[in-house]
Every structure is written in structure tokens, then in C-alpha cells.
Length: 339
Image 1: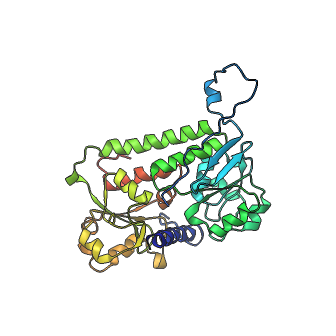
Image 2: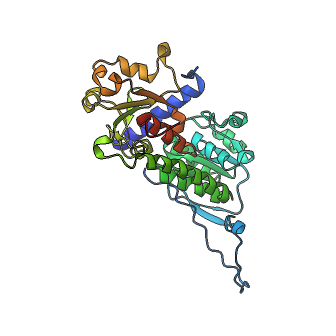
């Protein structure tokens, strides 16, 4: 049952993002993941002398390279992929951050960042256009395992296409995946720089909240799709903890439909919601929350601490997620995290 809830919770969140990308208005106007790619040790006959690699050589990938993805599937690359299809916004953002924009030959229908991605061929949304992917002749297809139909993966792999799956549930797993893609694509230096920036942003938050005692940590409720919240086992729950908060839904696993009575009883100090989308009658999720019966007694509502965040920063396990962490920490502790 938990697995079903996890899948449908992720699906609901993803559907929300499709609405945002297509029809919505801007409101402002499996725990495995890909470990760092494991390079095979290749010993060539006749090489008797030891050679010392230069610092630049140390950041270059040696091919052939054999790696495993989050499912345990194994792939061997004879050279850096030159044609890459991304079927998830987080993967696309990672590829662009690594400077691989020219190698990206296809993206998902929900991709909207960076701006240059809008000119890339679209490969479908939750229903992947398999024919378009095949026509792109990719050397590598990147997907988030929880958001793709296994039958679609099989249809592509049966044709010999390398479909590399990830499913990061923590910040560390997200950064490890960026390093893995950097190694596969011979962008290890760029990956190291991206991860270093993410670590800097994470550490800024950790340093700011480290002095908080247990009685000073604020209770946080988060709603990123109407009527749904997130419990433990998901990276958004981890982000609340890293930001110094206590998730009032941490007794749950994965994405769950909310129990309003339980939220009222938990009495969160801060309520966070996806702030990018307007729903029926131009309502935000924050408007819906404030209109619910009994929720006006919650501390966060009474104190006007119902705060909209950029859901793309927090819902995509990619290079910008630590920017989302910073935004979340500022919302919870504005006195500790300055703009």
C-alpha cells in the first residue's frame, strides 16, 4: 500500500507541474539511487611504466566505462554520449548545468528550465512518445524511475537504447547522481563545480540553524498539491529537517492525502505550499488552506505564516534543489536566513 501511495503521490505532484507548465498561471503576475559511476579498471598489455596523471587528466573519464543505474541495470559506454534525451525536468536541468545543452536532443513536455530548453524537441509527458525518442537516435536516455512506465523503458531497451534510471530520495543521492552523469558524459569537472555550489548552499542553511534547540524548532506543514502532503522517505521531508523544521507529517511514508483533523491537531507554526500555480477562481493552495474549516485556529494561519514557495526548486531533485532549501529555510526562519 505504501508503494502505491508513493507512486500516486509522485504522480499527483507531477500532474500539478504539467498544469503549471501548460494551463496554469504564474501566481506571481524505491530508495536506491545511482551511485557514482564505477569505472572499470582497464589494464593494457605492454604498459610497464607508471604514469602520473595531471590534475586535468584526473577529471577526465576513461572509456570504456561501465556503470549501474538505480535499478542495478549495467551499461558500458565506449565514449561520451553525444546525443542525450532527458525525460524528466530534473535530469534536463542537470544536463544544462553540466554544459551539455548541445548534446541534448530531446526533453519531456514538462521541461521549462533553463530558457534554452524551450527550443528542444519534445518527447512526450507521462505518455512518452517512443517513436520520437527512437527517431532522435540517442546514445543515452535519462529518466526518473518513479515517473516512467516500466513498459516504456523495456520498449526502448529492447531496441538497444541505454535508458539510465535514477530515483534520488535525499540530497546526497541527488548530488551523487549529478556526479554519476558527469562521469558518464566526461563532465566530471563541471559536475564537481555544480556539487560544490550545492554543498555551499546546503552548508549555509545548516550553519544558520545549527544553534536551534529542540524547543526552538518550528513545526512545518507542506502542501505541494491540493490535499496532499509528504512524509518521511522523500527528499522534501529531508529538506524540512535540513532547514531546521519538524515535518508534522513525518509519521507518514511518502506522499499521502491529508487528514485535516490531524493537521489541525499538530498545529504547525509554518505552512508552506506550492506558490507557482493558480487554480479555479484564481486561488492558490494557500487560499484553499486558509478557507478550510477549523484551519483558522492553526498558529501558522493566525500568524499569517502561510508561505508560497517556488515548487520547481523543491520538487525537482536537480542542481537547483539547494536553492529551494535556502528559500524554505528563509520562509521558516527569516530572522536566521537573510536574503
